[in-house]
Length: 415
Image 1 (cartoon, rainbow, N blue to C red):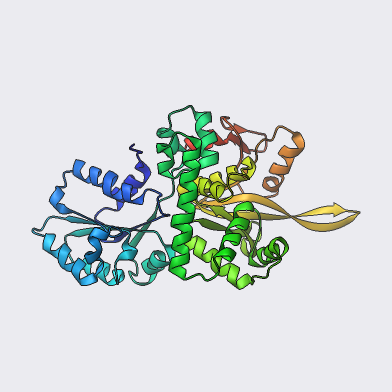
Image 2: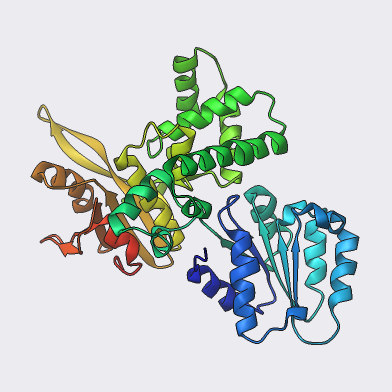
């Protein structure tokens, strides 16, 4: 099954030949290797690049174990360069290569190479982009399938696709399974045998049961405001065991580094400042989150919010959780309360305020969702996303309401 991921291919082609190391990050099994070795190579060939000028090396393949040695890798690549034409070096899972920073820097000294690498660990790669390459690294993050990408390869109708996406998420291989139990078993195995096993091995975690419990709590509270101190108290109340907030903070950093979860900070919209704690955590793939909980807590309101968060990130937005302080009367006294905007999405000079709600059929519910917007004193676009299909509608306050399926399938729906 071929799933076209044109948004990433377009970005790779736009950055082609820019004298930077193109570093493709993303979670395990999200499709990075297929994107680079199949789709990108196919496009290069369509542009007239010869096979001999495309050097592909999968470093997680034991057959290439010798090439994990930095000097062996350099000698091998140099032996393939036979003329002055551009050579495209594609290295999959670069973290397997010893001293990979030095190797990539060495490639930058070769005039006629264009280098692309993939990696599955943000701490190993993203920080090195900033420090080691000093402006010579170009990171492109690959997410699991967006709903539009998922729908393009789905066999049923759009509503059936949505139902499956809410339950099983966008890991590409889930589309190759027909039976629900096959999809569920694949995701459970992927979570336990790839993600968790990788974290335990990489960070030498001594207490696997603690890490498991923190994962379960994060999975159950997706989209809820929390912090390590609150999680520590939750752990104490559920398991009657003590785990320090510092240990929890460390575990969460492992999950973020593995691209399992992502943190959204709170942002005071009027005060234009960040509020350090608490924050919200979302899963990079809702299917993995559901699998972690044995598909027992698939509340569509939280899952839909997570899907919207991922879609906004997929479109290139930076996401915060908005806070709007307002004055209210309580027993004749003025007091200040905080209203929440689910997402403050920023992309360059563009800003978008988003509320996620299953429906706003009830006038009181609609006012509840609109109230933070009505107290946000700027002219940026304000959107309420509801369940199902609904073309964009504007009310007298200029606030748009749109169905989640229409939002997800039209990347220009909110611009």
